[in-house]
Image (cartoon, rainbow, N blue to C red; front, side, top):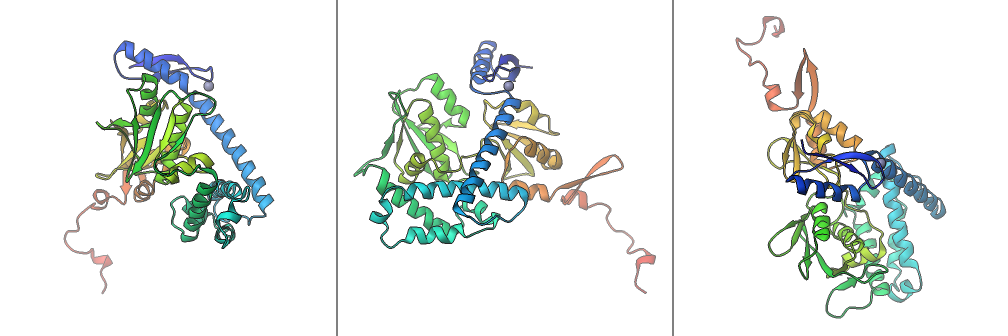
Amino acid sequence: MSYVSVVFRCGCEGHVQVYGSRRDRERKAEWIADRRDCEDCYRAELEKKREAELAAAREQAADWELPALEGTEKQIVWAERIRAGYATAVEKVREGDHLERNDEEGDFEAGVSKVFAKSESRFWIDTIRDRDPDVAAVRRHMMEVGRKARIEPVVDGPTVVRPAGMEPISSVEILHVPGEVRLSTSRKECETFIDAIKDIGFRWGGMHWMFDCGCSPVSHDAVAAGIALEVLALGYSAILPQPTVAELVQSGGFERDPPRKLLAAARGRAFLFRWRRSDDIFDTVKSLPGARWDSPYMRVPATSANEVLDLAEQFGFWISSPATKLAESLVTIEVGGETVVLGQPTALSATPLSGGIHADLRDH
Ligand SMILES: [Zn+2]
């Protein structure tokens, strides 16, 4: 097996599994270890960050005198974070006198009052899918007002965001089209940059780099904005032709695309796990019954639904609704040492009826 011992960014020792020639493996393993913490530290850090976010969200909700949220415990926690994101964005829009100048009718505040009166967790969770017309209206105003207020007016051409406190190495254009985010560079980029964008999940499409974002819980704008932040962190300027993306990048008030995802395959009854290359959980996911690497996914047969859901939950994978539906249709039970899958046609076509109905069962 191609394991390479490494010291992770957090200082813990461990190993990563990489494929390629020996020389390549060592270089890649080092590259991966330099950029990430070990699994334990990663999860501890994530937990800490979530708790801090939640505490801040609750403080803000108390300050705003927002209604207590209703729903399951998990839904409430998620909804609280999303609501806090909106509240922060609203505060940004309210700064200065931009509203007086740009929203004389007071449409923005009217929308805010309507939306923030909502107390169902489900409502807030659904806002990230843009289903509610009131939320969409508030968002539109946020974009409009924010654009007029903060972004320099651009006559013809995109917004350019420069990395903080440094001369940009070069610039990268980020644009989304249906189903994917495209990234175009102005020159041949260095290996570190290429490695970093491949890690996000980009692949070279001949003209530009492409990242499939059809299966994301957040909007395409938010996926593109998240990528722009990563590009900026690498020391590159981000050229943003879409004003909605530029607005998100500058306000920072948006939900990021989760790097760990559990999806359902379009064909065949299988689950697809997706994560970042530098996220060393290959072995863990590969240990699921029937798991097979099907680049860029780990494909796991639907019959392993119970194990798949356990692992997804334990490692904080975002679960798509088709994956949830698939899992719900596949409850497995143990019968006489054999696993029987309920809800799958093969399991249900048990013994064909022959010779009619048993005499005892017949109506007289
Ligand atoms: Zn560690």
